[in-house]
Image (cartoon, rainbow, N blue to C red; front, top):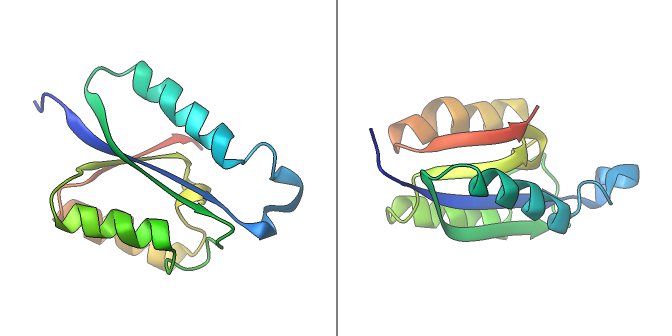
Length: 114
């Protein structure tokens, strides 16, 4: 078993999130992720990546792209989001990352809430 996962906290908020803006705020997402990490000793935060004001329907987001660069550099091996919708809303591209890209790069993905 791995001793510690090198964690990337990823948060995203879209202008299209409308009425949920407060509950989905970057700060709220950060708090939920931080609370989860505090409860799990096998998680060590390496970086935080945020895309405030970016849609989840594509992955052309600066924070997400920086996180991918850090995956390629071997800096992180675990990504945590508040829930799956904060990761992405396009089912095909989201599926690519979850089913192909992450496994082939040894990345553990955790969505805290469903």
